[in-house]
Structures are given as C-alpha cells and as structure tokens.
Image 1 (cartoon, rainbow, N blue to C red):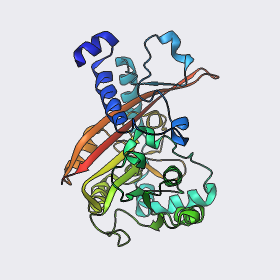
Image 2 (image 1 turned 90 degrees about the vertical axis):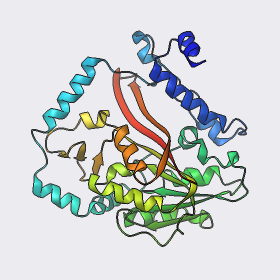
Image 3 (image 1 turned 45 degrees about the horizontal axis):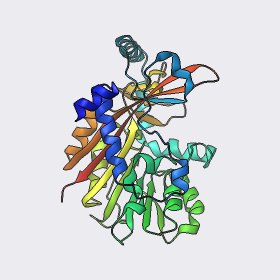
Length: 330
C-alpha cells in the first residue's frame, strides 16, 4: 500500500515515513470539535512539499526539505571551522557552573515578552488534547523547563472548558517561575509552577509514577551533555507506566548551529549563546540511546527538516528539529 502511495504521490521514502507518522497522529483527534485550536493550528502540518524550486517563495514554510550533498558538505565545513576558535576553558567552566544564573538574567531582562506562545502544541502532539481522552480523570502533565509558560498557558487555555488537565510546570530559573505563578493565578486549581533543577535531586512536588505526559520542548538542549542522562532518569521516575515523554528539540545542522561564529563552541554540538545561555544540537540516535537507556520505548523519532522562507526579503532558512514520542513500559 505504501509503495503504491509513494509511486502515485511521487514522494521520497523519507516523506512517506513522516507522512504516515502525521496521519497516525491525526487519527487520535478526528472527533475534535471546532474551536480555538482548530482555527490556530497549521492545516497542512508536515504535508507541504517543495517539488518545484521556482515555487519556493509561494509559501512561508516547506516540510521535509532534503539537502543536496553540497549543502551537507558546507554545513560540515562550518562546524569544522567553529572548532578553530572555541570558548576559552575558564569561561566555559564559569558558564557550566550554574547555568540557571544566565536564565535568571535572561528573564529579568525580557520577562514574558521574548518567546511566542506555542500554539502549535496540539497540532504536533495531539496526545495533549483532552478532547481525545476517554478517561474522566484529568490528564497530568509536567511542562519541563517551562520558562514563563509559553506551553503551560496555551495548555491551560485549551483545556479550560473541560478542566480535564492539571499542569505541573518546573524550571530552574526562579525568575521564570515567579513570573509564571503570577500569570497562571487564575488557574491555581489546575496548575502548579515550582522551582526544580531536573539534573539534581528528585522533586517531592510530584508523586512518583503519577504523570501521564512529560513535555520537553527545547529543554534537554539547554543542559550540559553530561547532565542530560540524569535529567532523563529523574523525569522518567515521575512517569506512570504507559505514560509518554513528548519532545521537540534542536537537531544537528540546524540553521542556528551553523550561524555560530568564533568563541561559541564549548564541545561537540554544544555552544554558548551571546547571552550566556547554553544550547546542544541532538542527533536522532543520541536521543534514542538516551531514552532507551532508562527503559522508554520509541513510538516516533522524526527529523523535522523545514525550510522557512522570508518572502519579503527572499531569504531561505533551513531549520532542523527532532520530534519524539517515547513511552514507559507498562
């Protein structure tokens, strides 16, 4: 069946596997009623393919854009050149000593004005839609590395009518947590922001093996590579059997990695931004090893290759993310 579909649609094998994944996600939510999310979501998520190069500026984004061999070689050369001017070891040690400091400074400066709300969450992770939930029990979610609530607040808004979601929200920035406590005060019965460094001791705020979903959006990439495993161990201990870890994070060769210049590289695929915050760029295999190592089973592990287009400036931006769903064994 897939072979026939591929031939009829003229899709590559990569496009077929991703398209199948997208359709599987959509099956969960066919019964969704119209409303906020139906008007805000990307109607063609994962399904807009660039077939004719001359049409590139007709839309703002294209999915599953394959790179040429020349592009891949250019990307590898840029990363190799970054290794010629790494961050000084003393500066790197200072940044790694207490990464939360940089984020506290960031949120002191920007408050809740920097990041946009993640109104695409239910499109890309329909598991978060309580309208799909058969159980009458509330969906228990932990928004890991919640920041000022750019995922937490949309989740609370979209589940407000049913009230069938409780969102724990943790961050290691006290500034971020304080801001989120203020902005979520109207949902105090369905939301609990709290301070937690997920690389340290297990939190006592959440009972072990109680969560339905761990939501990890651009959070593991903010951790030093040597601390990522402990973070995943801690988080998984809170997940109930059959619960899911949902992740979206930066992938190796993303545009933001290739744009780094001198004095940004700390270690392989690990960088400091201009504001001192840290970022790591994952491969699919790295994440698979990380999650399999704590007993999570892969359901999806997809490389999202997206071409973002600024039509006014005629600029093309090649973005790469890894999007995953891993489930705890029953």
